[in-house]
Amino acid sequence: MTGREKKEYNDLFFVCSLIEHIGRKTENHRNVVVNAIGKKKLQHIYDLADIYHSENIDKISDELIEDFHIEKGIFDNVADGKYSIPTHWDIGKVYKRLIVDICNKQDKEPIETLIEVYNSWLSRKIEDFNSSLYYESPDYLYESYIKGEVL
Image (cartoon, rainbow, N blue to C red):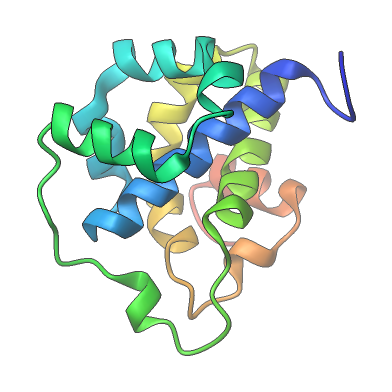
């Protein structure tokens, strides 16, 4: 472990932040981005996140958008936001914490869990920047995810 958290957690944080960044640029729900990139490439990005992290995130996202033909969507939660909008790094941290909790408590693999979480009902709730769900504690998000509804 270097720094304040495990390298794997920081790598996951980068991948989640990148997904959020691409979703905002392409105006897509985040599961659209995740599914377009696919498990194999997501695993590759995760495995090399420390290298990708030193690159410009706009450059990386533009390359992924082009390589995986991620078309412009109609979901612009940033423009629709009525209040202060969290950064892509803020939302990356929300997803990272949830995925880490699920992996640790259920003995699951990070990328498989990432795909599962982004394709879940909870992802749509986190994407709603007019709600306060993304501000909730990691424990609350985990318990809501397990229960299948906002508690």
